[in-house]
Image (cartoon, rainbow, N blue to C red; front, side, top):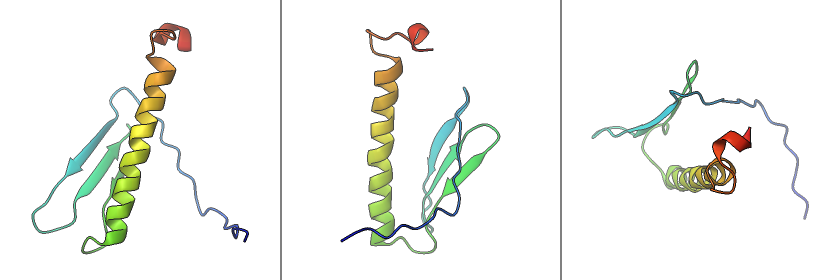
Length: 88
């Protein structure tokens, strides 16, 4: 069975700056919020209404991929065999 191709609606590229941050905001009576501040652009992730099983699955997927991204950055830029000065 082949996968049906669906064109992407949009692609957003966020380039991190020195002051880029990711913060989690927990609220007692509404959905949590994850904010990514990349300098001139801020992205806010939250669920639309009560948190669902799909929201939980997405949060776990996001955490896994963020951890993989962090490992890739460490491997590329901060391994002793490849110091930051040589990575440029």
